[in-house]
Every structure is written in C-alpha cells, then in structure tokens.
Length: 385
Image (tube, rainbow, N blue to C red; front, side, top):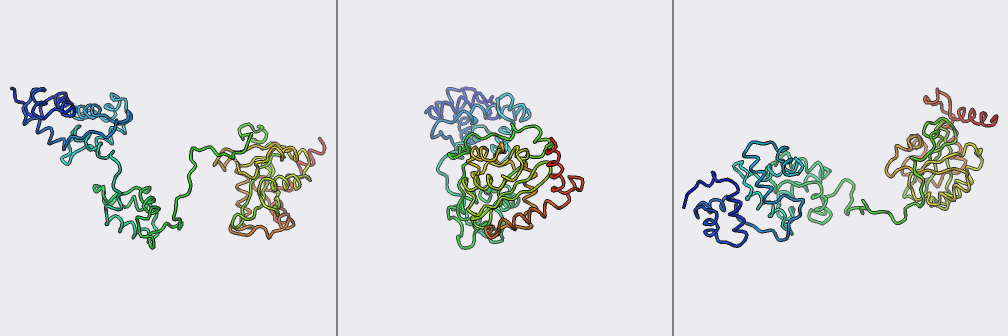
C-alpha cells in the first residue's frame, strides 16, 4: 500500500476518510478504503481533536463540513475571505469569523477540528459562564459597585482578556446574570436600580392600536411647508407619577402656543372633551390639521375631528422629530413645569398666563416678531378673506 505524508494529501482524501468514520467504520477500515496507512488516518484523527456527531440536523444557514473544507482550500491557496465567501455563497464576514475562530493554537486552520469545535459550541444546555468563573463574578461585582454599566464592563473585559473566553462576557450576559441572581444581590446593582427586565414587545402588534389612523405622510403640503396658519402639533406633558398632564398645542407657521387644561385626567375621553371645549374659541379657519404622536390619549381621534373640525394626523412610531416644533415648545415649557412636578396644582388661569408669556416672546424664526403678532396677522388676513 502506498504511503503518503498526511499533510501532502489532497483534502478530498481526508474528507472521505471522515465521512467513512462518521458512517461507523473503524479507523483501519476507513484508511484502507481511501488508500492510506492506518497511522496516516490516526494523524488526521488526532489533529481533528475528536470526531463528534451533531445531536440534531444542522440548519442550512450554518457552515457545513464541506463549507469548512472549501474554506481550508481557499486559505491554503492564499485566496481572500471575500473571494472564498463568493464561492460559497456566504457573506464575507461569515468566512472572516470562521477562520478566526477555527484556527488552532499553532495558527493553522483544520476544517475537521473547526467543525468539531462548532458542534461543541452548539451543544445545549451550556454551563452558565458566571457559575463557572469566580474571577469573572468578582470582577463584574466590583465594577457594578463602582456604577459601571454592563456595556462598559464588557468592553473592559475584552480589552484586558482578549484571548481568555472564560473572562469575557457580552453586556446581555451580564444583564442576564443580574436578573437571574447569579451576582451578589446586595452590592451588584444597575445604576437604574432595576432588578428585572422590562417587558419587550418588539415585533408584536399592539392589541389596542389606534384604529383608522391617518399618518403624517398624507398631511397637506401647506402644513409641511408652514405656509398657512392653522396647522398644529400636539402632545402631552406628563406630571409626577403619571397622575397629571397638560396638553400642548403649537401652530407650525406662527409658533403660537395653546395649553390644554386637563383637570379630570388624561385618558382618551378626558382629552377628547378638553380639546373640544378649549379650542372652540379658535376661528374655524385656524383649525385645519392637528399632528400627534401615537399616544393612546388620542384613541378617540375620529370623535375629536367631528367635535373640533381638526383633521388629525399621526406621526410614525418613535419619531419625535416629525413634531419638531412641538418638541421644542415642550422644552421651553420645562422652565415653567419642571419634570417631576404635580401638574394638577396648576389652574386654567396659570396655563393661560404661561402661554401668554411664550406667545409674547420674540422669536428669531419669525424675524423677531412674537407668535402673538404672527397669529394676529394671520387672523386679520383670514377675516378679510
């Protein structure tokens, strides 16, 4: 039988050898079938570490044994990771990560050893990293006592222990250890003092979403261009303990502010009634559109439209910049209503006085005119029309 050096055989030969071994053949029988000596097959087996079989079929999105052999061929030929990825139909980052993780201690990439390591990483359940490493627990505990965030701790671990996987932990692993009680409950705390994870609803449609919303992208062009008064943006300022609120309206063209008193609460029926009652003094020509975020307080938007004459539009979720004028106004109102204030103690007269001060303050965007002057000019022009 011919004898060949193990490192000089084409990769197709050891590939067939391992296929036979995985099929149940002994080492000697597999070596005979591929035409190598038993010792040659033994060298391959030893270099691969050990031969593992996956517990269940591997999903097609993961690299297979054949993929890793192709990567080894490419690495041996000196091809770039991007070129290898194109041949495999994978993203180049997948090949970069595979070559980096699959290298042995001597820097060589052995596809069978790398495949065995991938199977080991995939096995479940895994031992919790914080249970296995006392040094990791002590380090994270110490940094949390110094009010470091999990993200800062994770980056520091990676910086000081780049080659020690046991002393590396991503931020999510640290959060999970905190919430599961794997760290010292007396001293290891987040800066927010939160002890449990907030409920996440990403990708889950809300059951109580506002029906038949008219989105901001269908709003009239004159509202977008601020060419006409009567197009308003609205929101709520929430008080201490979510127990009180004030409605804020600001005209996009004139920056005129109108505050809504909500003495009976800020749920949808109360907001509907307050908007209908407290905007009735506005001329009908100045009640064109109202843009709001997707807050539940405007669940009855269709009734508000019938009562007020406003045509209501809603911003996209998590897009406060689509109500930029109102957000700016709310920032100015923080001077009068600091965060954490009980807003129920302010009367309608108090709100009118605050609105009057803002409306009589000159604004650079208006050419140093006041919002009150700009609104009077528009009201006069509408009266002549």
